Every structure is written in structure tokens, then in C-alpha cells.
Length: 391
Ligand SMILES: Nc1nc2c(ncn2[C@@H]2O[C@H](COP(=O)(O)OP(=O)(O)OP(=O)(O)O)[C@@H](O)[C@H]2O)c(=O)[nH]1
Image 1 (tube, protein in one colour):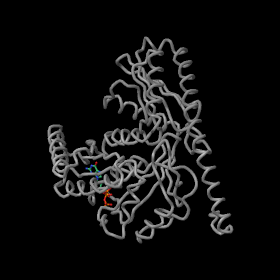
Image 2: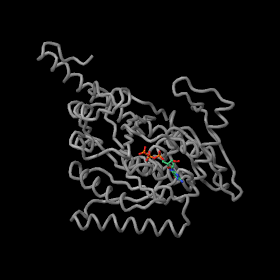
Image 3: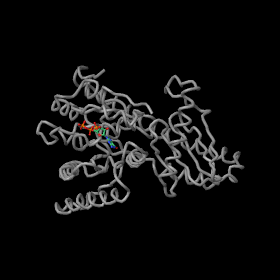
């Protein structure tokens, strides 16, 4: 996945598929109201181009672990290195675009920000938001975090009831299993009671137990991202058809860099299977990085030929194959069924073609949107004597 800091914000069009809306005026208003923003991190010079990306906000009290989550998941930072992260004092916006399917912006908020300062245009922020992740430090007293969560969620809901509210009960690595469950139950109950007391029980909060020291943070992020992929039901369907015709037990579609799985078939996911997939991707990428040649476009040593087969000691076979330049399919199947590898490969070929068609539709939608935007701009510049042309 390519992660980059961007200076140009995304488009202003209403996205029929995603239902998000960005607007240049709004962005500029926000920019003006947030004096601490760095150019190049939050430069809102021109937003009327390109694709609208769903926005994921990372919020929570200071030192709850927001920046660490972002660095570990999207920058491959080792968890121990996060000990040396400095406190964030500006909103950091980052574009994560690895494919048409996994493409969004992450906004990391400083913990100490006065979120409801009148100069801070929170309405604009929430209006274009797809998911709000609220991080609660489970190793700390969470009373203040809960009241902050309540305030944030209720304000955000008023502006945009379509936001997915995701609560990460974070840093659970220090807790025993019983303790984890107890904490989750307590936090969940208090948060929901607070909403019920305010007559807002219709607001749905999803809870996840997370830690950067294991795979739980990747799994939680996968679920958050999946909710923002409008093609998810189609992808799931394609995977169901693929596995039922190939004698495969479980299949995941992974983003190879972040190890976020963007879709899986409809059978339940267990953590161990997910962890094995992550380990397999690490092995493939690490070996390729050492001995392979990096693709000039993506910078990744991962291409059409990339594949791996691992025979586990319990008669299960893991099979990884490249789907697109950023995506890989990882499957689990019995050894006996792997004897029909020709059939699996043929079905995989059909699956890949179907995925390509889904991609093409999305690309067409984006191109049409771009055309429409350009037309609107040329009309605007004509009426203003050519002075308004942003280019
Ligand atoms: N044990 C443990 N520590 C964590 C975890 N995630 C983050 N931390 C630690 O928590 C501390 C604070 O992390 P940050 O990512 O800087 O927190 P933040 O929320 O971005 O803080 P601000 O920028 O001040 O808002 C760091 O020392 C991290 O190493 C985790 O899952 N487990």
C-alpha cells in the first residue's frame, strides 16, 4: 500500500457510491480555523480534483495510542519504536491509497485539542467522515475517556448520522483474558448507558479489543475499512463462489502492505487463521524484499508471478496468489483438495477477471466524476472571465 502525505485534498463531488461529500469552501474554512496545521500535511489549496476518499478519524485522549496505531498499521513501524513517538500537536492527514478498493484518508487528531473550540469547524470534519475511531487506553482510568467519547459521538451524530462509530479498547496486551472481557463489558455498558440516558440509543457503537503488540489492531482496522468499501457484498459473493467451486475452506483478500483484509467469504473468521495469513504475507514480502526486484511503480517486490504454498503440519495447505499489484488472495484448503491445483488455478483466473471488472466500473465512475468537475470549473471560469480557473 502506498501511503503518502498529500498537500492537495480530494474532490468535492458527492459520491453516489460512498455518500461522502467534500467541499472546498468548507475545507478552507477549516484550514483557516486550525492555525496549527502544517502545509503539506493539511494544505487545502485545491480540492476540486480527483477522487473522494472516505475519511477515517482517529480520536481519543492524549497518549491513548492513536499515532502508534497509524504508524504500526500503515508505516510498518515496529511496536517498540512507538515508545519514542512524540505527542501529536497538529492534525495530521494522510492518504492511504493502495487500490480502488482500499483508498481512504486518515486524520490523526492531537489528544489535547479543544475539539469544540468555536474556531474549529467540526461540522465540516464530520460531514465528510466515514468512520470515527475513538481510542480508549484500557490501562488507564477511562472515566474521562468515556465522557469524551460521549461528547464526540453525540456531536458527530448530529452532523452526520451515517458515520460508523468504532471504539478501540486499546493497549489490552497488559491484561489477562478475563480482565479484557470484563473491561470490554464495563466500557460497553457505560458508553451505551450514557447514550440511552441522552435518548440516543439509536447510535450504534462497535467495540474492539486492540493492541499494537499483536494482530488485533490489524484485524480491527480491517473491519473498520471493510465497512467503507461499497463493493464488499460483491467481493464476498465472488469469494463464496470461488471457494465452493474449488474445494477451499477459507479465502481472504488481503492488502499486502497493511495486512488489512478487505474481504473474506461468509464463513466465520478466527483469529488464528488471520494471524497465519499475516505471517505468510510477511514471509513472502520479506523474502521478496531480500532476494527480489522491486516494481518500479509500486516500490514493492510483488508482481504477477508472486505466489507461495505452505504445507502446515495438520494436512492443511495455505495458498497465496497475487490478485492485483496491491492485493493478494490467501486460501486455506485440505491437502487432498490441493491435488486439483489446475482447477483451483483456473477458478482463480476467473475470480481475478471478475475482480478486474468490479475495478473497471469504479474507475469509470471516478472518471465521469472528474469530467463533471472539470466541466463545472470551466463553466465557472467562463462566468468569471477565466479568473477562477484553479489550474
Ligand atoms: N502497551 C501498549 N502501549 C501502547 C500501545 N499503543 C500505543 N502504546 C504506547 O502509548 C504511548 C502513547 O502513544 P501515542 O501513539 O503517542 O499516543 P497518541 O494518542 O497519539 O498521543 P497524542 O499524540 O499525545 O494524542 C506510546 O508510548 C506507545 O508506545 C499498545 O497497544 N500497548
